Image (tube, rainbow, N blue to C red):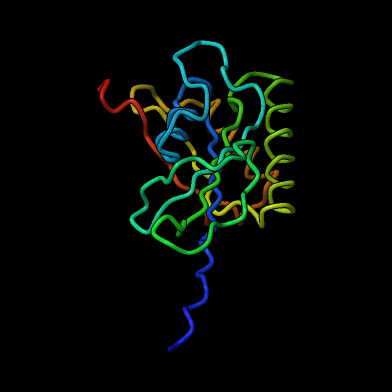
Length: 172
């Protein structure tokens, strides 16, 4: 009898969400994770005040498996191979709003870039930077400046891994 095949290592994918306060970064993160991990509510003030990471284990159909015991962003050891073995370990990083003015903007951009740098050291890096925009609002000069400054901090190479997601399409 042939020995069982070795367990397949799950794909590890890290996505960071950036954008203006109120554009739906936390709600987008919850949609990606398949559960309410981030606090998401409509507010004029920023709800997310610091970078926060949550993990979802996805099966071969990219459906979420029950949440792991460690919901603090740590990746648990994969379970033994069976029908519930994850094929993807998805890490989603929610960040504070990038478009607050003045020193707060620079402070938020510094905190975001520092957190992403630490993610590179611990988790192997960020695979995709998702720029969350509201389809219900105009793209502002503040958003353009914030994105330019974030790219300046992270390097031009980040643009090859940047995706724009439009939220609030139901409000059009």
